[in-house]
Image: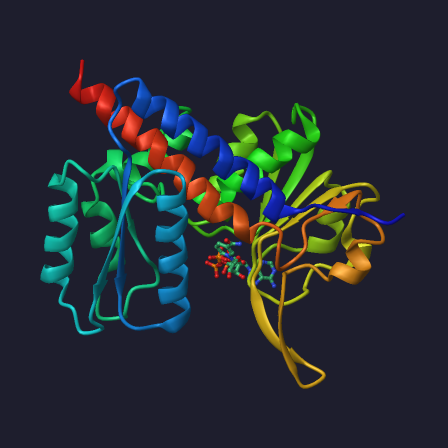
Length: 291
Ligand code: NDP
C-alpha cells in the first residue's frame, strides 16, 4: 500500500481563505478589525523570518498586525511592560510572544501575564484549564491544525485509537485534550513509555511530536493508519542540509493510509490556525465589550 500524502499547504490555504472571508463578514457587520501583535526577543534569523511571515499572512486576511522586535538583553520588567501595554491596547486582540525566550527571561511569568482572552497561542493556564474542562478557549495552534485535519479526513473520531508521541505543553498535551474531546481513545507516549512500537501498531491515528529525526518506523504503523508528523528536524544527509520529521517517511508511507510530509504537512497549518484564533479572540472581546 502507498499512503496518500496529505497536502498541508493546500489545507492551510483553505483555512486562511475561510478566515479572510469570516473577517470581512465580521467587519461588515460592525465588528472590530482583528489585531495581532507578535513579540520577538533577540535576533534569531529563523524566528525573524517566521515573525515577518506571520505578520504578512495576518495582513493578507484583513487584520491589523504589528511586530515588536526587542533586543536580546531585554529585561524581564521591560518584556512584562510590553505585554501589559498590548493587554491594554484596544487595537490588539491576539498577543503572541515568540518562544523560546532568551534563558535569562522567565517564560512562564510572561505567558501568565498575557490577558487570557488575547492568548492566541492558548498557552495561558486559564486556557489550558478551559480546554481540558470542555469550555471554549483559544487552542494551541499546531494541535488545532492537526485536529482540524483529522476531522476533515476521518469525520467522526469516536471509536478511533490514537497515540500521541510527545507530552509537551505546546503539542502533545493539548493534542490529547482535543482528541479526547472528539471521543477518540487516547494514549500519550513519552521518553519513558515502554514498547512504543507495539503501542503505535494498535493506533488508527499517530501524532508524532518528539523532535527526533525519523524515529517512528514503518513497521510501527498499523496498515491504513493516518500519520501526522509534527516534527521539524534539520539534518545533514549526503552533504546536504534538509528538513525531516519525526517519522521515517519512506517506510511509514508504504504502510499508512495517509501521512503528512515534512516540510509541507503540519507546519503551514500552524500559522493558519494562529489567524483563526486571532479572529475568534477578536469576536470574543468585541462581544464582551458590546454586551
Ligand atoms: P518537546 O521537546 O517539548 O517534547 C518532546 C516530547 O517527546 C517529550 O514529551 C519527550 O518525552 C518525548 N520524547 C523524546 N524522546 C522520546 C523517545 N525516544 N520516545 C518517546 N518519546 C520521546 O518538543 P515539542 O513538543 O515542542 O516539539 C516536538 C517536535 O515538533 C519538534 O521537532 C518541534 O520542532 C516540532 N514542532 C513543530 C511545529 C509545527 O508547526 N509543525 C510546532 C511545534 C513543534 P519526555 O516528556 O519524557 O521528555
